[in-house]
Picture 1: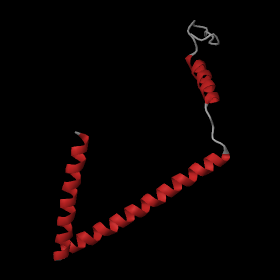
Picture 2: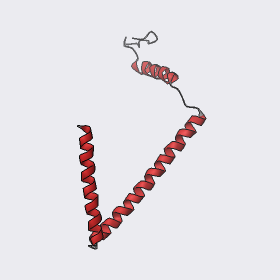
Picture 3: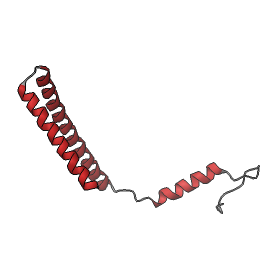
Picture 4: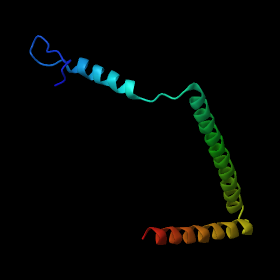
Amino acid sequence: MAKTEKKSRSGKPNVVVAYLRDTRAELRKVHWPTRQEAWNLTKVVMAVTIAMALLLAVLDYLFALELQGLIAQDPLAYVVLGVVAVAGVIAYVLLRRQTT
C-alpha cells in the first residue's frame, strides 16, 4: 500500500484515488514529443497512408481487369492467372524454406 493512500470510512483503501494518483505519476514520466517531432511523425503517417491507398487502388484495378478478362474468356487473362498462380506457389515455397 502506498504511503499517500488514505483509508475510507470502512477501513479499505480508496482504490479509485490510488489509481488516479498512480496514473498521474506515470504520465509525468512520459516523454512528450515537441511540436516539430509531432508534425514530422504526422507527415510520415500521412505519406505511408497515401502510398498504401495508391497501392491498393492499383491492385484493385488490376484484379478488376483480370476478372473482366476471365468472365469474357480472354486467353490472355488465363495466361496472366497461370503466371500469378505459379509465382504465388514459388513465393510460398521460398518463404517456407527460409523459416525452417
